[in-house]
Length: 119
Image: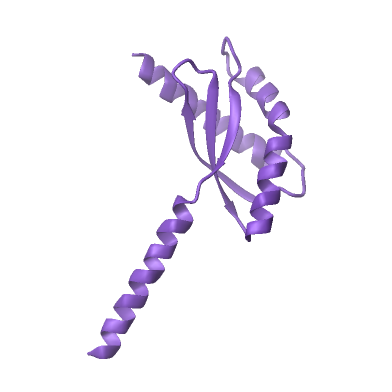
């Protein structure tokens, strides 16, 4: 029962954070950001927010710095939008899974092209 609540709160925080980042934060360093997953601690005190950032490594680093700087604002907005006893601490983590899968697809396509050329 508790696990259902933890995942439900995580999904709600993911939805609200996506909206806040896309529409309300005006920091020019924040580029194209997608909140991919939010993992909540069992006591709902910590939210590990996985984000996928489009851009070169420098742009990604700047985006992560801007997200860290805006953490206080995002926490207060979440507190206003979701009724929780404690507003969770937000920890932003770069989600490289999309890039990793894209890299694997490119490698597989290269192998497929090489095989087709050999025939």
